[in-house]
Amino acid sequence: MRHKPTREQWSAERLKEAIADFMQRHQISERLPTNPELLTLDAFPRHDLLNALHRYGGRASVAHVLDVPTPTRWIPNPLLHSQSALIAAVQSFARDAHLARMPRIPELRAAGRVDLANAIICAGGFHMLAPLCGLPWVHRRTIEERTVQ
Image 1 (cartoon, helix red, strand yellow):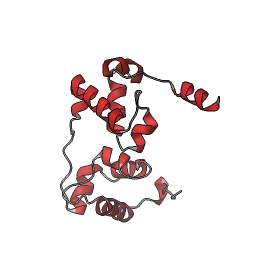
Image 2 (cartoon, one colour):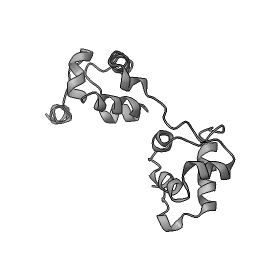
Image 3 (tube, helix red, strand yellow):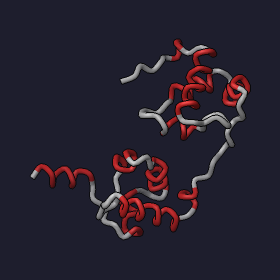
Image 4 (cartoon, helix red, strand yellow):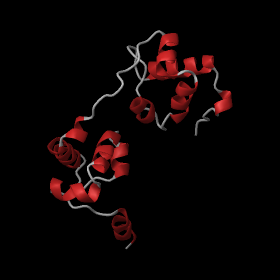
């Protein structure tokens, strides 16, 4: 496990280096990374970078120092605004993952689809969306009980 710096270990220069490193590793050169990018692109969420960004003057200040534009304030997720798009995305994911049931959060995370998991939760949850998708919802405990027997 990588060591994440505590609040006392961040300096303006270290923050600059960490953000520049993150941008280089993920080939983001045209703007500062968005919050969802900081939370989903690495193996663990970069809450430390988010907090440091706010501590050192916010996005606009850090972007000015790094000489990059700030990202748009909000990038809409089409899955949150269209139930039919969400249902189609869930059905497509289940088909591609060869699942005969509603996908679970760990499966969505492993496939890099945290956005889909969040949209499902915002739409009422997995158990509410499963009938609309035509997929059975199997609770995690039920799956674990089947594997134990």
